Every structure is written in structure tokens, then in C-alpha cells.
Length: 115
Length: 110
Image 1: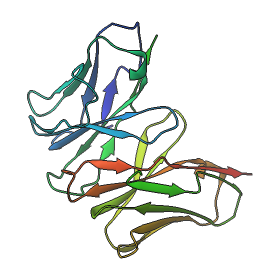
Image 2: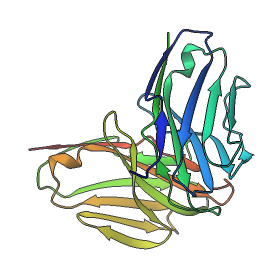
Image 3: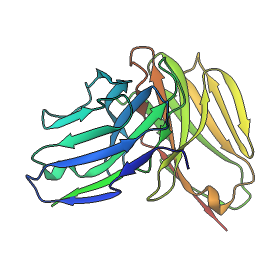
Image 4: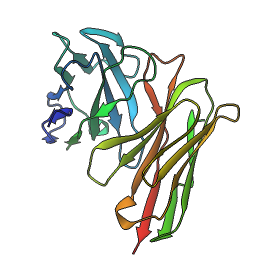
């Protein structure tokens, strides 16, 4: 299929470990978003890319969180020195629009558990 | 107060019943999205609307911009409609980012 894919689907990390989560958006999609979804909650915005430019990173909860999209396609969300409160599902979405309101297509998410 | 509020939080219906779930928001928006999330599954976009009404199969979404309110209706509900339905808005201020409600948990009993 040509949807958004994410890897790994599940990740168990020990507290203090660094993790890297990958997102492959739909080919040609300009916009890419990362969201964090805690158990029983709606997703929360983390960061937004338009092509390779990170236009909004206001949702990143701390400087331990870092995202990149160097060639305007695949994106990686990195979490350094993971803490238990980082346990959540991390969702990636892409959109073909670079303006307001385009339909966002979501990946299956990466479920991160920090022990 | 969250930008997006959904009600009811939980809803149980008998198969065949008409279901309505609601979303209210407090900011100016460019579009409102209804999304569906199955347990352990990803999120699927059902509707994106900025005015009026849209229909897809047994699902109908309406929005009233003046009242900052949207509803999602499910006609002739079926157990496979059991899911969390999430309302999200893209705000004029928000750089296309979505602000999400907490979701409506819908269970349809056979």
C-alpha cells in the first residue's frame, strides 16, 4: 500500500535510553506532522515539517525531543534519555497540502513503553 | 479548557440505532476533522469540513460555524462501527496543526 508507515510498531526502552522513531510519509506529501497520544487521551501536536523545513516545534515537550526530515521525505523523531512519562503512542501524519486544512493521513503509530 | 470538547465521552447503542456524537470548539478554524480510531489501530480520516454537511455511506457530519459546533451521525449502526471517534480542528493560528478532542468511545452491541 501507499499509506504512511511507521517503524518500529512497538518499542520497549529502559529509562535513560535513547530511541529513534521513523516515519515514511505518502510519497510526494509536502507536510508531515508528529503527534503524541497518551493512553485514553486525544493526540497532542509535537512538530510540523513542510518539506525539509521544521516550521513548528512548539509542541515538543522538552529538549530531549528532536525531529528531523533532512531530505523532505522520511522523518525521524528522536527521544534522548527517555523517561517513563514519554510512554505513549507516537503518530505520524502527512498531507499533500502546504496550506491550512488539508486532510492528514495517519500512520499506525509507534507504541513506546519506557520502563 | 481544551480547545475541543466532545460529548458524550462514552456511548453504547444497540445495533441498528441512530447515533449522534458532538464536538464543540473555542477557536476560529479553517477546517474540522472527524477521525476514527479502532483499538490498537491507526487513525482514519472520515471527514474534513468547513461548512454545511457531508455524507459518506451511513455517516453524516454537520458543522455550524456560528455556534462552533459539529455533529457526527451514524445511521443504522453496526458493531463494526465500535471505535473512538475523534474531533480535531485546524486553526487559523495554528500552522495547519490539528488540535484534538479526547474522543467519543462508541460501542455498538449486536
